[in-house]
Amino acid sequence: MKLCALTAGPHRDDEVFRAGAGPQGGEFYLPYALIRDEFARFGVELHTADRCTGRPVDFELHVNAQRRLSGRPAYAYLYEDPLVRPRNADPALLKRYRRLFTWNDELVDGAHVIKLDIPNELRFEPFAPWAERDLFCVMIARNTALSRPDPRNLHGRRVRIARHFEAHAPELFALYGRGWDQPHVRAGVLGRAHKRLREWHRRLRPQPPAFPSWRGPVPTKGEVLRRARFAIAFENVRGSRGYLTEKIFDCFVHGCVPVYLGTPGAAAAFPSDCLVDADRFADDAALLAHLRAIDAPRFAAMQAAIAAFLRSSAAQRFSREYFARTLVAGIAADQGLTPLAPAA
Image (cartoon, rainbow, N blue to C red):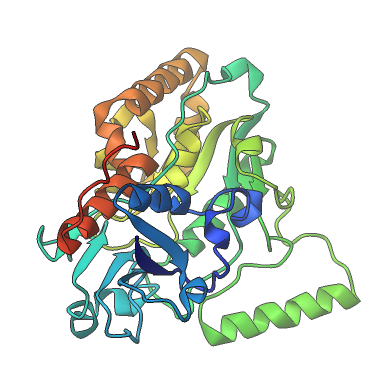
């Protein structure tokens, strides 16, 4: 057996392979257990780097480009947008990797840098219909911001649409996630400092939530999205070309119609009747009017379009299974590995 050391942020002790160890008691955003199992087919053990200490490591897999490389053969999946993690687009750093995988079309060359979308669990279950959904529109997000100001940051856009609903249709909107008891968190060091000060002040003198639509955090997104007709699914940033995170798929698998905003042109990856493209509207008033005009038959047609997409071959490039197969096959080919023969 060969040995691959995995570097994935602060994670240690093989925790990324354990079910339920991810955010909010769910899975991690990347399908680590599937990657481990796929590597095993090629005779490779995959462990977090701390579990490989003192053992002869054959190669490494990094999630996001790392500042320091050990000198062993190394591969990376560039998960974060360079706006959030600039080293994911640092040419001098990236050329030190034997092969890279990323959704970022601005880096993909088909040889050294392979196209690979952020993966999603594309399970399909019957959708609750219009009449069984007691929430008109929701947003599930954290009240957070980038480490430095940037016009591509979409957090302020989330705040704006939440405030519009609160002012003009409060009965149609519910806000979920951590931190919305506080005012809008602004980007940069000063914004983080203000956030901490407000947290301490609220502990000393409790106040009503800064966002009246706030309903608190949720253990899982699914328990809210199964009840909602629409969900504000804005990306964190207007990222590089190809940037599509889990937000739109979280809505799809629960039969909730996403109101999507991301990198210009990103919504073109999906049939137009699967979602509401927020870029099409001049302002939030026009967007709200559009949502109000969608009736039960139109909503059912959109759910049918979502179901058809999830079952289609076009959706498979976004699946967790496709991600694991493609990543491991690319690394195995570079390492000259072939699948093990089935046990007799």
